[in-house]
Length: 139
Figure 1 (cartoon, rainbow, N blue to C red):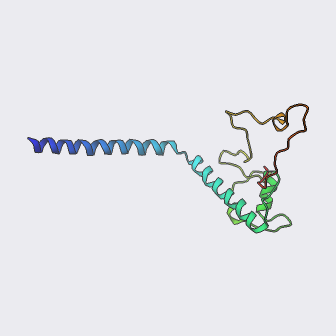
Figure 2 (cartoon, rainbow, N blue to C red; figure 1 turned 135 degrees about the vertical axis):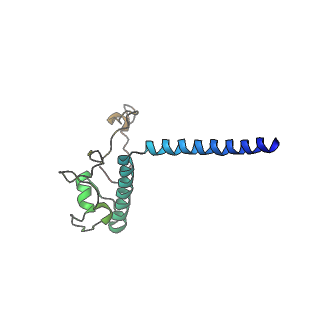
Figure 3 (cartoon, rainbow, N blue to C red; figure 1 turned 90 degrees about the horizontal axis):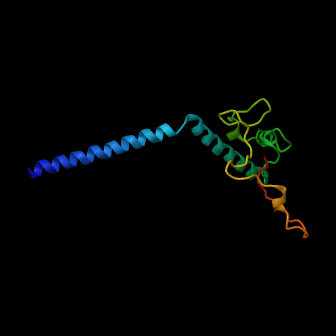
């Protein structure tokens, strides 16, 4: 009798574990959309390309989306071609777009208010504060 109870408990634990793993796998695969996976891979490639550009030129590319694409594709006076970015999807304006067709660039987070010009100034009556310049790409 003890042996039967032990075997049935082991079978129950194995089946329960298999069921939990099956549900977790199905739930995870269902959540990961192909466009989201492509977007993540494209972002990694773009970041790698911008870092490679900085290593060769010494500064990050500046400008809007189209100007940065031209810089990365060697269409400026620097003539540095970053191969990692050549596979990116471009729209008619020459901007890098995400899998949904939206040009990449900074956008305010939906849950946070956009920074206002007043946020960069000191209280009234004193000199305005300036944000420190960063050597990051400007979109």
